[in-house]
Image (cartoon, rainbow, N blue to C red; front, top):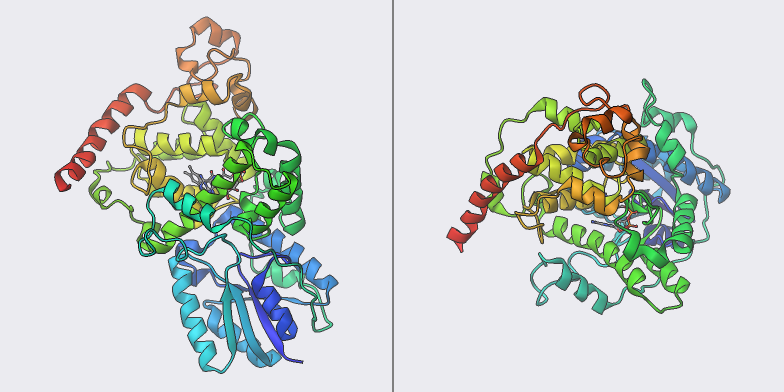
Length: 483
Ligand SMILES: Cc1cc2nc3c(=O)[nH]c(=O)nc-3n(C[C@H](O)[C@H](O)[C@H](O)COP(=O)(O)OP(=O)(O)OC[C@H]3O[C@@H](n4cnc5c(N)ncnc54)[C@H](O)[C@@H]3O)c2cc1C
């Protein structure tokens, strides 16, 4: 019987997995995870994602063991020599994987494919993580899209409901399991200090955990998604993002499950939910067609933006949730504790950093990258550049989120603040989003002394907004001169 490698990457699942299905059709399956952070470039995982990866591999290993398939984990500076070793050891005749789109990984995969083909192996890559490959949706059949709405219309026209592959019947080598020592040797988990308690309490990494999130979302939140998705105080969104980032569930499976749940009759809630999956597709489209955006702005005018020297104290205050702006602090603490932050709060936190504090977007992007369990290069870059105003379909330069008004609108009772910023919990609703404006006796009654229990704001929102607008006007002017 011939043997095929299923090279596992961000596709840690057995169902709807084209690479695994191809390997199973070929013969005996060797499931292989290669840990090669040195060649991953910008896509090398941050700390929270490494925690997730450890547990997801553990879960996948246990599930593969039931099929008699070993999960082999190897580490080294580069994937190709590791693959070559395994090919020789196990007399492998084919290698299959699902594609990734980060520029560093695309270049690596091309080289690996060419080398393995040269060795006479059968090699194929598949679409395991997107509804639409970035090159399959083009404006006039030629140009990449830079605006979301026409992009998504073109996607919807091609059809969102796509075939989903069943879990294949697997022929393993008889021996099975994932050696816990090998997994431990990757050193993916935090040790001193162990900061992952909040992550453990919040998440269940792995394919079964992904399905639990999806079914819970469909039962409890899909019917009100469009109304509640902006409310960080409510469980209004799916929280599927880390499962999608690690490929524990595919967007095809999500679309199919939602369509089945609403018996094919989409309403404004399910349509809106699909359009959010569309933003993920759009992010991948942009990263693929504009690979320089991993560390440079899509809009070239922003190359010249006069970022002042970074105020490290302010950056640290932002990272620690000590800016004195309650909505942002709540979000940054939620992020630190759970590895996730609500989308509405991500936008506010990013806007405060980039626009009010004038700290370059890539410093925020790297912090999110290290602390998010759903860290996804395409989505993170797109989210940051959108908020900074230098990306595709970006927020207009004059949109500077006002975290006080945003808090009052999207966390009307202040419950989100009370949960994550307990030192403000006794402030009445009227003042909880702007404690600095509360009458001194109200603060005293709530046990809040600013500068002691909770910081004064690191920036004056109105003044910093005016300053940002002046700088941003100059950039806008550049376009007008250039047009
Ligand atoms: C500054 C900033 C950084 C971000 N970084 C990331 C990141 O690293 N990884 C990440 O997955 N998302 C990122 N996002 C997008 C978004 O905040 C998260 O995808 C969303 O909060 C995940 O929660 P959910 O699964 O409950 O979303 P839901 O509302 O349930 O949406 C379902 C899925 O659609 C996708 N999605 C939703 N909103 C967006 C969006 N705005 N852009 C792209 N895809 C979206 C996600 O895959 C999400 O899981 C970022 C947004 C901002 C503003």
